[in-house]
Image (cartoon, rainbow, N blue to C red; front, side):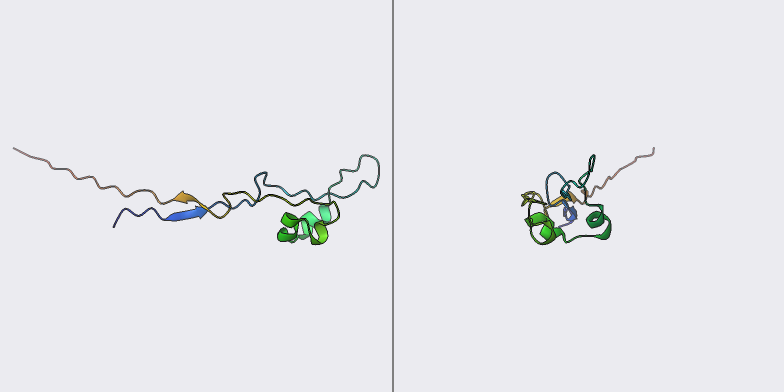
Length: 89
């Protein structure tokens, strides 16, 4: 009754690597091939996971979701009670 272990945090990373590849085709020599526009202006993360929309056409392949995604990862600590008895003579 009093020793519940409720979850207080959930696993929040959709993919095991924790990163999305925001790449594009090379435009010039030593091009980093990273699309900073998508990264800094926001992007649809569902399209990024599925490789559709702005991520279609070889920009991003379909990613495998982490099996732990959305599962509890941190729980309440157990409750403890300490009782003491003292005798004085």
